[in-house]
Image (cartoon, rainbow, N blue to C red; front, side, top):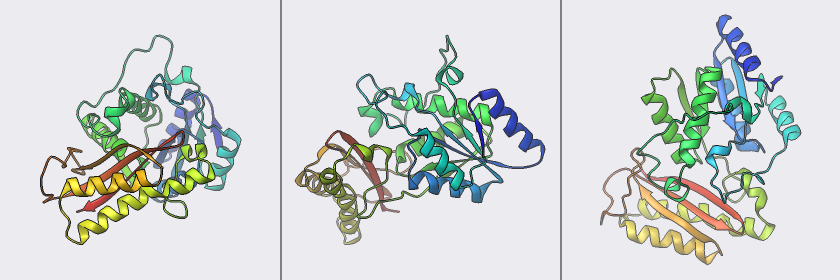
Amino acid sequence: MIICRNSSEARAQVAQWKREGLTVGFVPTMGFLHAGHVSLMGLAAREADKVVVSIFVNPTQFGPNEDYASYPRDEEGDASKCRSAGVDLLFLPPVADIYPEGAETFVECTNLPEHLCGLRRPGHFRGVTTVVAKLFCLLAPDVAVFGSKDYQQLKVLEKMTRDLLMPIRIVPGPTVREEGGLAMSSRNKYLSPEQRHQALAISRALGEARRAVEAGENHAATLLAAMARTIETAGGRVDYVNIFHPETLEDLDVLDVLDGPAHAAVAAFFGPARLIDNLRLRE
C-alpha cells in the first residue's frame, strides 16, 4: 500500500494508473476506521481496479461548539485496516494542502441541506461538499463510495456530483451495524457500555416504525411519536425524528396520511455522542 501525505504525489500516482487504463475507486473518510468503512473499501474494490482511501478530519464541516479537536484519531490503526483491506493508496493530506492559505472558495448545495442534520448543524454540508469536491478534483476517481448511514450526506453528494457534471459514479454502501443493531460510527467511541446498550433504541425505533407501516399504519404523527418515545424511554435525548421523501428530503409529517415513498431518520444524544441512523419505511 502506498501512503501519500502530499497532494501532488497522490494526484501523480492516480494519473499514472489512469494512463495504464486502470479505473480508480475512492473512499473518503475522517479516519478512526471501523468495519463499516472497511465494507466501503471492499465495495470500491469490486467497482474499480485500484482503491484510494483518504483520511482527513475536515475542519470546515464542524461547528464552533462541535468535536473537531477531540474527534477520535488513530492513524496507525487506520493504516493497518486499510492495508488488510487491500487498499492501494492511503492519502493523508495536511490541512494546508486542502485549504491553502487565503482559500475562500466553497461549494454549496442550497436545498437538500435545508433539512434534517443541515438544520441543526449550520454550514456543515457546505464543508462536506467543499472538501469532497476538492478531493474529487485532486484524485479524479471513476467511482466514489459513501455509506448510507449518513443518508443526507449521500443525497447531497449525489446532487453535487450531478450538478457539477463530474464524471464520477457515486455508489452507496449499506449501513453496517454492531451486534444488537447500533449503526457503526466513529463517535460510538464516546459511549460507555451502558450508553451503548441504551443507544440500541435508535435502530429499534426505526425498525418498529417500518413494521408499523408494513402492518398498515400510515399516519406520520403516530409513527414519529412512537419513535421519539422509544428513544426517550431508553434514556436518549431526541434531536430530531423525521419522515421524509427519500429523494427530495422534504418532510412528510405535514401530511395527514403517507401515500408514497417514505424514509425515516433519527438523530439522538446518548451521553456525549450525537448518533444518527435512518431506514426506508416504504418504497
